[in-house]
Picture 1 (cartoon, rainbow, N blue to C red):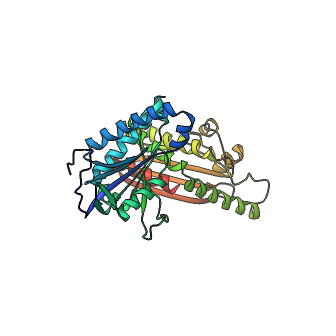
Picture 2: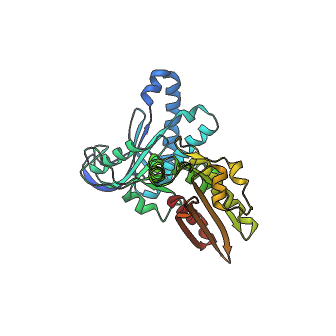
Picture 3: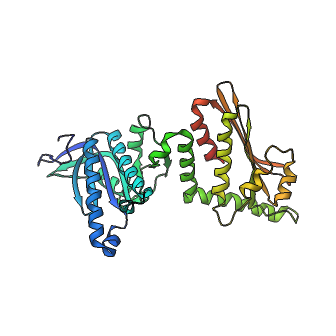
Length: 351
């Protein structure tokens, strides 16, 4: 096999090999064809050109195509994941530019496993697992198995979401799956922009939303049965501006965390979040938390501060019930400034 060719030239004699399999599929392709066959075929041609060129650049081999689906083989997990990320970033960029190609939403799954190669085709559980992983991917998304993640986690700068080990159809073994967050190229130019995009992606996941709703529901039940009226409902909260302690250059970190929490929590229909202007009114003012909560009519407050200590960054985050003078949860993080991105990830996951 020529690693720099997109043509699959395996021997007709069957043999086993450990390879990286990539499956791709266009979401809703049949409906697109039904709606406008001519336009969809033009988009498919553009899609095929992008796929073939990218596979060739990353040393992959196209085993076969079936309609809008691609089955590709790589000898390197790093090359496969790099290729998939480049493909998705291309379509994402087209969508942001308002191009027709942006309507193409590709789902990609990648798995490293043992396969049988015979008569210009590949067979076996390794192929089936890659196919199932692809079917679980979000439109425009990329899912990889743990065998792939173990190979690339220290070699590629990627952000992932662990999806657990869902039961794969007709697959008896348990397979851990990770979603690779596809970050637009313009968001990769600064660490802060990258982190904000990762945060948004995490908060958009239904699992995270259900968890937040669950936490708020528990708080509501506790309030309903134990708190005397007329306290505000426990599903109402305000995110107070995170305080920057020290260098002014760190102000954007504090404001970024504050604004992102306000915006994303406001998207939940059953959560009442005080507006940004109301929260920022208390910035730098010496008000008691209980008075702030009473003025804003909320049951909970999220507060925090950012401090630079030498070459380290320290961040403190708290979730408080000021009406009962209770700290529901708090955490302090401290690490070298160079690891700020990792620190921000920890805050997002725990909050």
